[in-house]
Image 1 (cartoon, rainbow, N blue to C red):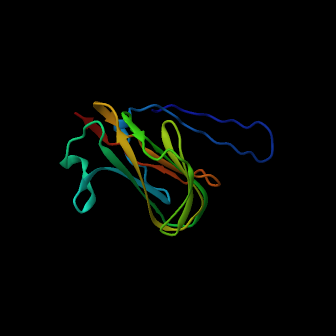
Image 2: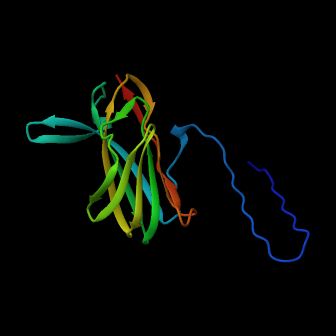
Image 3: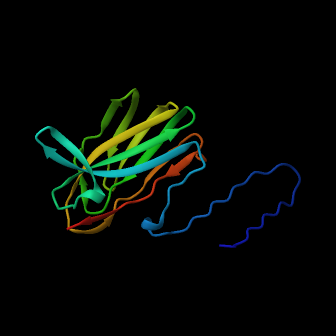
Length: 174
């Protein structure tokens, strides 16, 4: 940090430019990005089947084992309407998707295309109205170990400065 960039323009007339700074950080140290119109919060819940139907339990109140089903829940908040928004949720190591078929979905007044890929689930929205939107999908725990859940990232494709990401959660599978 503390690097300097110097730009010099030698001829007359207007000029445009941009600078991007990229660095690597371990995923468990990433904190949620705030300060843009988009805010993401990612949580994972263990699904337990009870006599009254499936119930979600917070991960800090239960232990994980291979074969358990987790529900990835992403809360998206935006203070304005946007068009052509891409939400990418990285899947945690040691987990596999349950829904493998991509397709158009309609939930709670929001239409989007959901695409399951090798390392992430993608959500593409042509129109994102202002407000709070919740995306949920199941994954299955496959392997024992300590893993990171991955982060969720969002970006408006027409205005890339409107972007955000969530934090990651540590998964301990016994």
